[in-house]
Amino acid sequence: MFIDYTKIHLIAGNGGSGCMSFHREKFIAKGGPDGGDGGRGGSIILKVNPHLRTLKDFTYRRVYKAKRGQHGMGSNCHGRKGQNIVLEVPLGTVVKNAETGETLMDFTDLNQTFTVAKGGRGGKGNARFTTPTHQSPREWEVGFPGEDIWIELELKLIADIGLVGLPNAGKSTLLSRISSAKPKIADYPFTTLEPNLGIVAYRNFSSFVVADIPGLIEGAHEGKGLGIQFLRHIERTRALVYLIDVNEDDLDQAFKALENELREYNPALVKKPAAIILTKMDTWQSEEPRPKIHSKLPVITISSVRGDNLDPLKDLLFDLIKKAEALEEPE
Image (cartoon, rainbow, N blue to C red; front, side, top):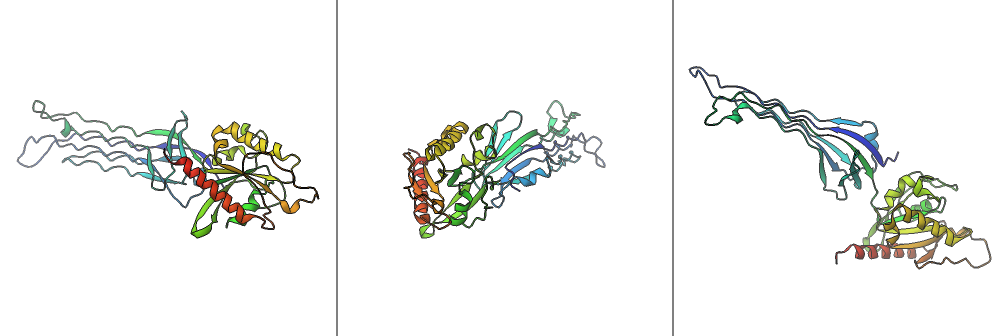
């Protein structure tokens, strides 16, 4: 099951309390203070696991609580630190404060880690309060509380190309033909219920990643249909491809509907390098010439079933990625 959103409660460990103690030894009647400090509480740390593709594990457990630090002891013995909890998340996970909505971390690199809830500091023992004029302190500190926070984890798939289309436009079939991905394919709308990623092998040992998301319908940005919960994944893609069934009654209207949904969700999406693919040419039965689509974007016609134009399509997708990379370079 693909899960791309969850909400969890994190409670870091409290710090251990400091100790009030005085040195006692044979023949030493009144030793000085020797109370040790308490140990720091355990923290909760997030790190990327490149093998994870979903947030499913967090649906089984919603509360994570780290161990508290050990209390300080006599003879200047400090308490042990509480054990940290390390939670692994997929690459592309965004961490937000559930109460404020503030973005705390965006995992876009495999080597990133983030301490999302810090353990409380240990309290000072009485030995730390010694001064030249106060040589037998009886003061000590209680350990400090660890951070307590509710967070939202939101997964946004990272891909080079995002496939966008109306339901049953042929996105999954195309992904299965140009990559090794095995998405569910059937001749009815909303066959795809979760995003799929495929790695496309290209010339000279190059490759790129293509993401297929469930079909969008008019009003998806407002919560209609199945696409709204997956629109966030398109934000990560470098370039977009609009897939339109060549048998649509009005190709221009179909394209405008898709473009409008993306614009309403996030205006930056329609500024990405993009192209239009007219799919299912093997089903075009009319003797009339194929209707044209009026757009400044590159247009290519394909048949995933027969394999028509799939190699030129790969060239086009690779060119889009190069354009996106050029836009990403600092001036």
